[in-house]
Image (tube, rainbow, N blue to C red; front, side, top):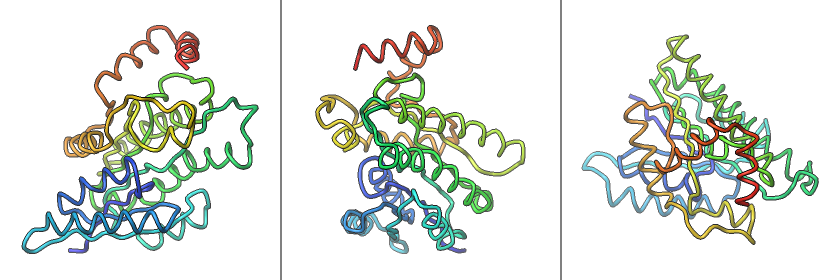
Length: 260
């Protein structure tokens, strides 16, 4: 039987790397995708060492890396053509945000690339790999955010992009059911996670709390095994989503503006 891989975008650090660790511990082959070759190589070395520690007598996880600018259509096509036959898990984790009002954000350098990465690349890769995933009875893991539940001033584009991911993922999940495609679509909505996200998005307002990405990664793997469609993490995140449903987007966005 041919090897199958978990392809993880944004796989060189943060949640993506934490998820790669969990896959490698279970003997799964992984493909890490990110923009920077140096960070990919560092992650690869770490995972190879982990694979050697956890290998079985007959198997050791293979760790491949792909330096790709996912905001470029041609780069996404190159990635797909290289790995189209052997991916049984697609993790659309790559994304970024920026804390600023819309008027203060450059469209060409910030807004457009954010939409291209957070939304367009995710849709494109899902569409490209879906037939292969169906062949392997595979999984799509799409990384949304708790901010998808409420409009968020100063993160207007980012929060909207994650709401798009939530809506898109649920619709595709239902399409897969209707078309009898053996693909499970898991949408992940994490709260604050201790990664470099806030250091890059808002270095002057880095939260002091938050959950460790490894805990989230373990929860994602568990949800995949159970063929779940949604994961809110941590469980206390349910409070905000319930509030949004009860009081609506207008009131929720006022609360978020106050908290900000």
